[in-house]
Length: 301
Image 1: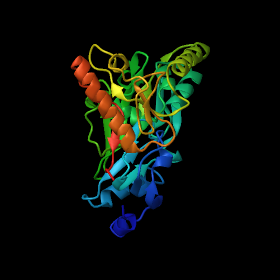
Image 2: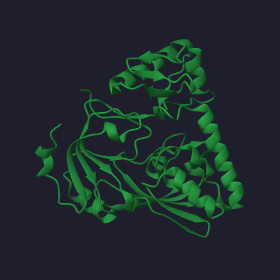
Image 3: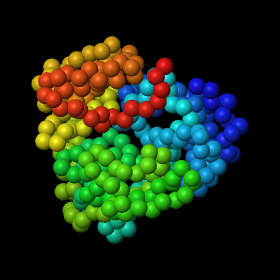
Image 4: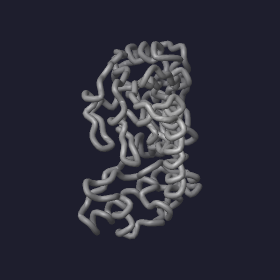
């Protein structure tokens, strides 16, 4: 990584440009090499101007709270964009909830509940930001982002503001069709009227279920593999003997074996190798090829 070497090719910004920044501190798995450049835009206009002027041969990668991200030990080349407080605002008008892409999913759920809007409770069980939820159609406990989002706003690689309806996103299970280099900045959701106390009670139930079934106190990254059609990843992993499996400092959780854990000294390579061995064992045992739900990015050392 050599961030300063490309600094002179980057446009001036009102936010911050940092170079060769270790990313392990920012990821839930606490692994990963440096970002060649880390850009913290001041606001949407700053982001748009930067993307419009940034040379097209320099890769740009959006980065949220990294709750579902595995950054390889060699780091990320190009520019990593991390949205700050100006992108985390939440406002409510009628049955519509407008949320910035950096807003935590659980914060959006809580704001909607206090306003007496149901339909977004499931976000209380997703440890990420709205930007990540929009990218992967995040969901849990029977609901997904596609069920409640109505409008999505992004900035494309040329710095243009793009507004899309939910029907234009190409949503499927843990998938959207939008280009990888689009950076989501905002979304509008719609809820239905209900008693705030009843909504908050359902959110508490979701939180309790998550705490009882998932290793949320560990260094983890959420579900490792997406569920195949007609099957559950954790059951396939369990049947293949993957529960508690270790590679170096990486382990498949004994509590929920579709969760990888950094036990304290894992490298990104440990975690990725563990995942690939689990996939191979499941494929040999059941014939099913598990698809990574955790997004793997960056370079090998």
